[in-house]
Image (tube, rainbow, N blue to C red):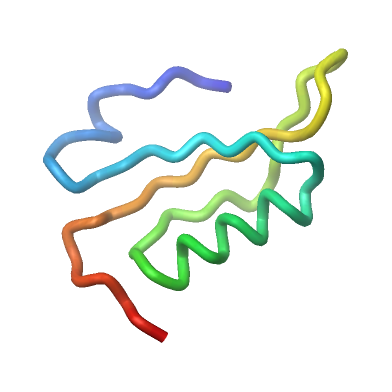
Length: 70
């Protein structure tokens, strides 16, 4: 996975979330749960490291807004 750079965290309330999951479906379901509550820059694909189990996904959250309640 690419390193986190300063641009990703330019001010308080911005968060980088790295997800490790067993499969794509699980990773995207978790991302969707985050996106339903906060402004989220979502990923459209996961990555897989050869020889390692599961997949990885990175998304970006903006926690500066009010928490959305369903």
